[in-house]
Amino acid sequence: MKILKMILLVIAIIIAIPLVLALFIKRDYSVQRDITINKSNTIVYDYVKYLKNQEQYSKWVMTDPAMRKQLSGTDGTVGFVYAWDSDNKQAGKGEQEITKLMEGKEVDTEVRFEKPMKGIASIKMFTEDIGNNQTKVSWGMTGKNNYPMNFMNLFMGNMLGKDLDVSLNNLKTILERK
Image 1 (tube, rainbow, N blue to C red):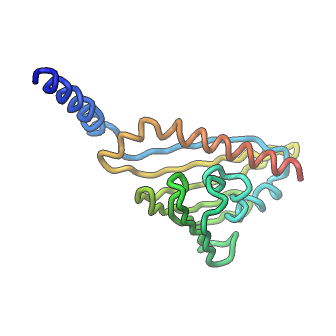
Image 2 (image 1 turned 180 degrees about the vertical axis):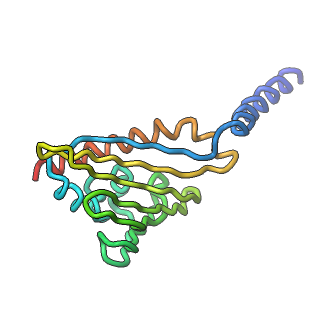
């Protein structure tokens, strides 16, 4: 009986630690990564403003090639929505909408996740001509996780950052081949 009480106490402590820590962790998260691509800003921007092109370079979109997709509106314009639904829990279900475009500079989107859990994130992709036929691409994501899921914010920068790095490297490889 004493061993059972000790085991239950250890389990309770293991569960309580993240819940207590989450009380002190910010609910907002922000992650950004950058890369330099050896192509003109025009070529880079004209590629990234089309959400459908993410099928070629975004680690997240490439998670399930068999996911069901529904597109509405005109890709590369404000209001275009790229919706997906997958049986793969890594891909989940949601939609991404272009909310703002600044020609040659910025593509803003809102991602609305349905599964595996509900959430909204703001994604911004910036392109900047840095001369010598090179473009700096910055890709960032901000969002909010409510308690107790905000505990995941401790790991969000590392997890999302790695995915952004992979995606940006894919983008660089694709565009520099053209």
